[in-house]
Length: 318
Image (cartoon, rainbow, N blue to C red; front, side, top):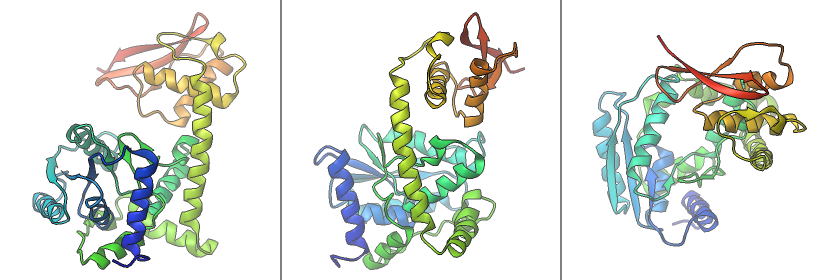
């Protein structure tokens, strides 16, 4: 192995991540699709610790079962102690990309058997995530991108460019699977990857992906600091007294509201929805409840202001 080549670069990234975040020597899992990113990560992870490859078959393409079995065989050949194919049913909530991600994470969570799961997101994926959040006006939390470590999810390659994983596969003589969805312009992330980011690199003179990743890291630090300040206000179950929100900065107050909404059964909150609930505190003129997404099927969830507090109530979807 070239000690300065792409395989060495990936191995160093995985080792540094493990030293910083994980207990010594314990087993781990890798999420393996068969693409260059996850295949290269599996190749460097398997010699380091007992590794189980988890291959999710979304069933969205013809021949997906054959591709999953091929990835399983690749994992065993690379030294994984086990490799499992997880077949899932992908729903429709949130669109095809979000629904596939939800199904995938649920399958990985069920199969990991308490072990951390390495995911092969790269710096390029982080840059795309930041651009998506920016375009959707999703607020600082979305612009902060993906966490490198958000137990049990581990992303040791967030500082590595996608070209390095492809080069590592070439160095190892591996032929990754080329997912046709990764070049399908129907998907927003594909157009960001193939059209928007290259244009930004050209217009701004290069270094855009790295700059977006640095932006995510800086916003992540700020977000975590503000979250910690909000957590000191204390958890709230049931009504949220307005008196507990008085005197808080806008950023901390909205984080308290977000935490309260999530604890009351909300999910997938956008920045605009949180701000709409915040208006019930800062500019209330007798307006009614604000609808927010609910975890419960066929239930609509609302936040409203009553008797000096924010309250939640539900209505059935007819």
